[in-house]
Image (cartoon, rainbow, N blue to C red; front, side, top):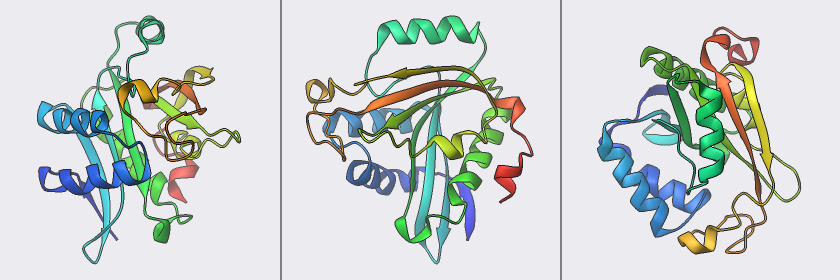
Length: 194
């Protein structure tokens, strides 16, 4: 398995996988293309024999899938002027799941954020209608949670933005766990060593 930073050559493949397995819609594609071009969008990937096994993308600043102005103001207040990176997407090919790949990608991303002056990681983690939070376990590698808020029906306006939830379709009932995680607390955790 090889690990490296995402490059512009990965853009089309990462966008295609995000649209296929995460949130679909022209809005997401347009946002991702703008982010790739911004110079403030980062990612790490794992490949094996030329196959993309997984990736994790993130960006500078406080940003949600679509605007949540009141919540954004709340997070800005909690961050107290410190630099924040927001997670964008994490995907692991089913063939490579349950082997710690998400944790390794998360640890790499955390180190890049710290190297770029990041103090906090802002996580917007899906809460499926059954209560499952797929990204919760790897996110603990970033560091210590300093702020958490569960927002039921977080994606209820998906249709307004032309988005389709891979779980619910157009009428999304998924919530989100919004968390502000201090990056410096996670270095060298036992979880990432697994």
